[in-house]
Image 1 (cartoon, rainbow, N blue to C red):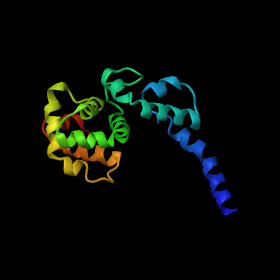
Image 2 (cartoon, one colour):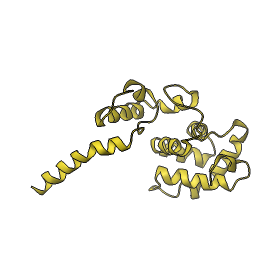
Image 3 (cartoon, rainbow, N blue to C red):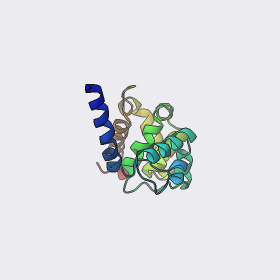
Image 4 (cartoon, one colour):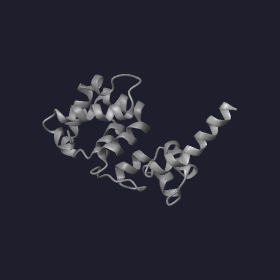
Length: 161
């Protein structure tokens, strides 16, 4: 009986969580396909489609699929969302000091081409503090990267810290 009560409470609270996370699907083909639909199922399908097809990197880099290459107002949220979908690739690229996924993150953050080398260098040089371990969350990664950028003369312009 207790398990049924817990399950019922969980299902009842799901729509509330979906309502609070209005823009939780990000950009990508899944978001375009399910645009205008609300509720848990369309959001899950949109996120799954975006994740499986791996189209967000392309969309963010090119400004297509409902993605925006200008990461101004929601840069931190977009960066966290992007990092969440690309943690392993970001770890690899940061450790190497470059790569497609790290370049896409730079796009999301809005790092100008002229500052990309400094961004890649800072990510590589501070990898152990940015990606502190296997249990590092996307939010922590973005926060840690922001701290590193705030301390860099060229990159501090891209942070609010």
